[in-house]
Image 1 (cartoon, helix red, strand yellow):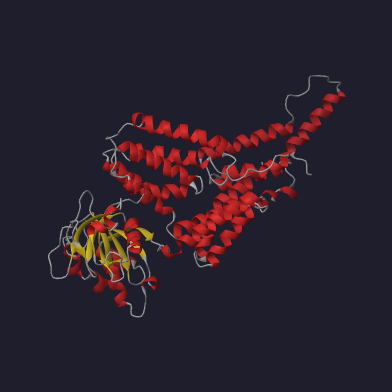
Image 2 (tube, rainbow, N blue to C red; image 1 turned 30 degrees about the horizontal axis):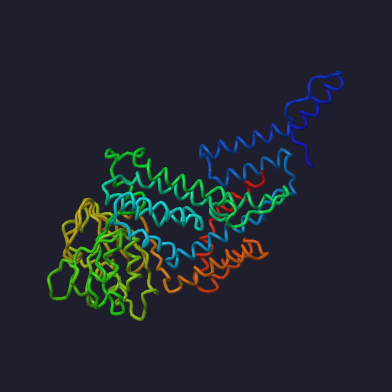
Length: 495
């Protein structure tokens, strides 16, 4: 082991004291303890100030431990072989499989059932469902699905979105305490216990403490959250919608022949019960736009004028066998290609004040035929648009969701006076493999709980099976791994 400069100084000081016959009291802390505490609190300070990325802080801590001689260089990377890293990474992939097949978003259907009940019932169900799901799925994945729905519910009850989002976030944390896989912290601590002669946690070991805390916490949130988080009218609701990409877009979607909506009345379909989608009008060839009513019979090739955030609109096209009207036309132009073969990347663009599109209709500009741009949806701040997109005059400040039939041409956008905002990758859900993904997830947890194989092995087997069974693509497998978090855990475990 190499001797650091500080250790060398300490050795020299101790030698001089011995030669001088020093017989003072025993030091309160050794130099090694002082060095360790300096590194530990220095790491805390860097994390708190967000001076650098969290994984870089962890690597700095690791290097500091090695260079001060507190950690042998030969042991520096042993923590990266900890089974907790493999378990956490495998769970990331398994959860990605659940999201890809729409299993996680099914919790929305549960909440929708009580969305028309008194506020305290709906709020309580939201908290309970979020807490339950968070015991098995990461908080980030749960909240990603819940945030659009929660914002919509808050608006329905005339309350600030913040008064719902904060309690929901706490419910997610409380729920994660009730299982080994609920939080990364539980997994890491469990993997370290055998070194101290303590057996690892089982799947629900933490529930003995976590469940009572969960009940008390949910009761507290249900009673006091509305009082503590008072309605704040001084803040604009729009900033929440922008932050979480919840802008309400108007789009035309086409009812295809194989859609479960075809030849059914509106009252018998589930589309009108969707919490984040509003059906504004129904457009039928040769007829004026029809206002939807319960007894209206939907036919194949009907066009529905709907309003909702773009992620939700894309979801319902898969769920109900629908298709964006302009996307369908784009497919027709690309002969021999199927829906899943063409680009499904959507782009948000802003119409500038000097744009060529101002006060012009999409049909008059010939966006698709002339410029190779399909208009998927449009957002006009503060307004609900009830006209067909082709007949709607565009205005400065409108935000469009468009699809390019070829490569994105920035020169073309400049010519049209369109300001690019962001690219929206809308992955199609594999609903037909939902139960397979759910079965793999449950089997991985079950075998890890009742057999001698650790959860890290059974969950790794489940994660590997997802790309083999074509539930996830390989690029989706690697993206799901959240390398930053895994590197952070591996490096910080060196402490």
